[in-house]
Amino acid sequence: MVVKVVLEKQLLQELEAKYDLSFLLEDAHEIVATNVSGIDRIRDIVSDLYAFSRKGEGKMMPLSLQDVIQRCVKLTKTRFDNHHQIQVNVHTDTPYCVGDASQLEQVMINMMINAAHAMPAGGVLSLDLSSTENRLILKVKDTGVGMDKVTQQKIFSPFFTTKPTGVGTGLGLSISNGILQAHNATVSVESAINEGTEFTLSFPLYRESSD
View (cartoon, helix red, strand yellow):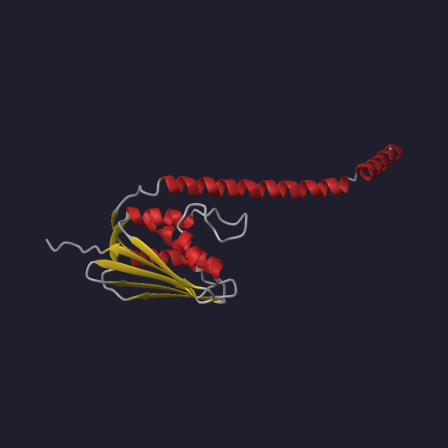
């Protein structure tokens, strides 16, 4: 019995040396990891395409944009570290609009994550909410790397991205823009290289009827 075990062990060692099994196992691990990464990316693309196709659909109802912002700050806190600051400033007593809360959260989270990517060494993200007579204004501003004019003109185009290959699908801001259009909202951007980026979102203001 002992002799058989020794022979089997010796045969296994010979096969391992002959076919370089250690390399094959290591290579197989890398192949599997690459395939899993590819599957995750396909999942993200399909998810974004689904969101893109349904961006005009939603359950519209009066809501507090201030509450949406606070939820998004909590949901994205793991994307920021001790080198980042998030400032929320509310300058209105009527932070209400009509919309789908989950869709507006999707818009806000996308912009906040983009801001985190734009500030890899740290920085400040400010979310300023104010209102005019008829509009609710949200400014999302970071102190990140900024964008040139050409990039600013393309950021809302489907599949356009400034991120490295394999990171992001290039649909986030395009979907966000479609959602905002469905909410009768507008979005504009101002940015400068090494100075940061500011998105301005403008919504129709909602006021409860006094009747």
